[in-house]
Length: 63
Image (cartoon, rainbow, N blue to C red):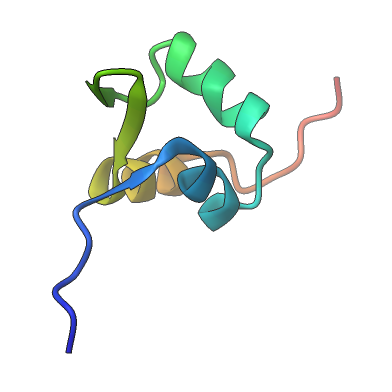
């Protein structure tokens, strides 16, 4: 059994929540999700991603 991942690359994080990488990058740039960097590699903590997802509205807001 593999240990649970604590962080994933940004494109993987985006796929986990059903967003494009560009949409997730916008959320990171807006300070909605904390990202960590190893050189140019952007990593997202899985627990932070889960908390951010859980905090999203449960009802659709029309723009």
